Amino acid sequence: MNIHIFQHVSFEGPGYITNWAEDNGHTVTATHFYEAYTLPDLNAIDWLIVMGGPMGVYQEDMYEWLAAEKAFIKKAIAAGKTVVGICLGSQLIAEVLDAEVYPNNQKEIGWFPVRATQEGKNHPLLKGIDLTAPVFHWHGDTFNLPPDATLLLVSEACKNQAFVYKDKVLGLQFHLEATPESLQLMVQHGLEELVPGTYIETAEAILANANLTRNTNAILSKLFTRLSNS
Image (cartoon, rainbow, N blue to C red; front, top):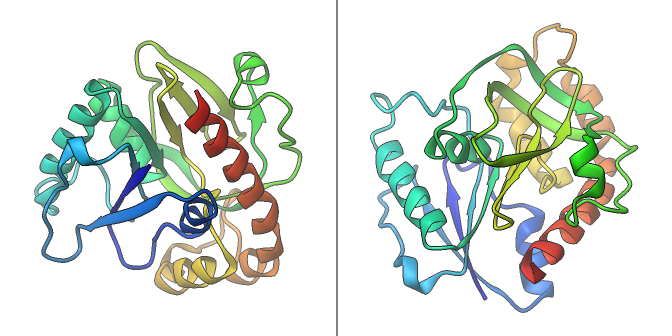
């Protein structure tokens, strides 16, 4: 299976996704929008994973590649590819599925829990997965639930945390792929956002809980394995 990554900034890479892919014998290729890029041949990929980044989906005037990226995501979904969006990636998927994306009431940065909706508890992707430990968030925007999508997870700070669309498209507002190394990079490049707030942790608190990535990586592995078998 060929997994293609859309990466928007150098400091938000695939993290543990690469480990999962290698462990399962999959090939990983990537488009780096922060460099000179070419989009892949849609017929040559099985999965498209759209990573995070500090930009907003509505900033096409600042990031000219956003329009081309959105068009490709839309084509991938229409072609029946498995498409996964993480943070900004989930927001891009929401927009191409005709949902509004906008600033959330507050930023959510740090380790905070999510909980399953009733639909989430019974969904094959999540059934039996332990979500009691916190997961890592870093986002300021949110989105409305796309038409015909199923809301899987919510949090206190942000209602729409995870959704699935037609069993092949998964949007996650949070970072299950984060590793201790990628946490360091995100904190290093985002220090100006770590101002006091109800749902904003300090850099020290974020990095002190880096061991929680073992649990979130295990959740990602289960989700992706189930998604690949659906």
